[in-house]
Amino acid sequence: MQRIIGIVLGAVVTYLALVVLDALGSAAQPRYGIAVILGAIVSLLWPWLIGYFLLRGAEQRRSNEVGREVAKRMSDDRNDLD
Image 1 (cartoon, rainbow, N blue to C red):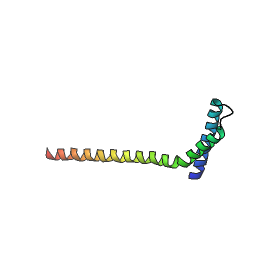
Image 2: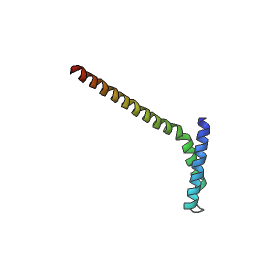
Image 3: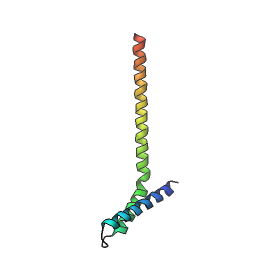
Image 4: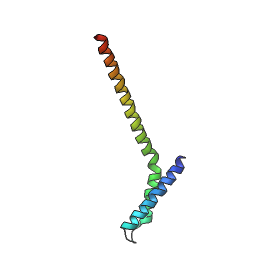
């Protein structure tokens, strides 16, 4: 499944790069090579980028959960002292 997603993302980025480069550049530019390289880079790097963002979100949720638990226990300790 990961390879299929990588291929699709690479193809989409290649197509978008061709459209943009075709609109911006002249016929002398190597736009096909640039578009293919961009597509290959995206298809290679997407699992790491998605993993990074998912990991960052999981760490943030875990940190928030720990903060809530600490606040709850401190509140309970204060109530026990009163």
